[in-house]
Length: 451
Image 1 (tube, rainbow, N blue to C red):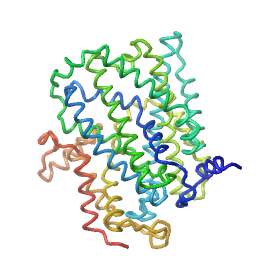
Image 2 (cartoon, rainbow, N blue to C red; image 1 turned 90 degrees about the horizontal axis):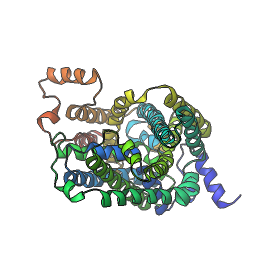
Image 3 (cartoon, rainbow, N blue to C red; image 1 turned 180 degrees about the vertical axis):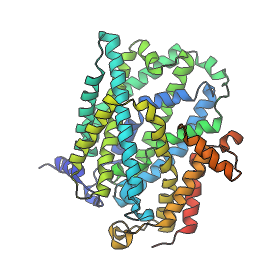
Image 4 (cartoon, helix red, strand yellow; image 1 turned 30 degrees about the vertical axis):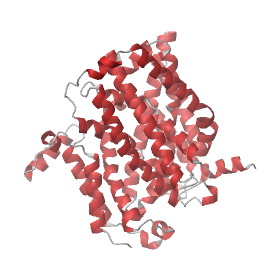
């Protein structure tokens, strides 16, 4: 068996135990390729469009740059922890929450990953169907769900080393760069960028809420980061490869989304891109690359489930997860549940504050296997839960998730104690991510005692 095949097999089969240093093959450039490709997404293009016309192009780009720096710094730190310890994300949460306590965020992570995996397959299949309708006059949405569901499940079965080395590094990154450069060239040569730059925003979105929207995207990957960077050769390479790779894609696609939305004034950005010359080809390439986001959600679901059932076969878990995601994408109107997925995601922003405080301050980067797998780690750690819950409450106080009934309930609860709600309506510059993360970080430092 060759060394490359042996590395791929180890990565595909590795469970929740720390990956030994000699079995971590990913160089910094390979980590960069992985996270750059994960950052290249139609969702990012659409998210960039959400910044406008509330913000003008100048403020949208500034908000993107600032949000990308902050968000990807946090994502890079999560990647660092994963590479230094060698354990997956949900296992790392055993340190501040206990083994039994980590089951709570694990269940939430499984729910959000299955939801987003199905949502990604839905986005890919819908866009592929739009391309075939435009070019061939035929519609085959369910067939596209089956095709991309099978492909992304196959990638998840293979694992990150196979995906990075046999697909992303050799082929995907170059096709993606070509299509992205083309869309950028088209925007710069066909749009009046100077006029768009001078056009003010409508004011429907504040600058700092725009920053928070950008921060939310890299932060949403924090619960998955260590699942991949545990295979990185060094923490430094994992940090820079993750932070720079995702930040570059972040800034590029947010900027493209804002530019296309302002210039074309289209309600459906995907349809607008399809309408430009060679837009279908560029979009088709981005769609194929979009499979790595669905792969990541399916793979991380299987890894997270192993935190609950360490003896389970990860490949079989990936097959089952891929089947569930495909079935949901084919039968359930997932757009209706997008807000619910955002609510689950809001739990993980303050939770990273707890993890970072535990690892960098309380334990001072001295995390032993007994802290994650030993008998003393079994009981829940309530200081972690209290800090986490406080951060989540503050997040929802500032920027509540838009779910029918949820916002009304929060308004009643905060009103009962005389607090203005939501706080962002009184302080429109205030976002929810950083205050909630900072509060949970500080609270844990104050409450926790090193076990």
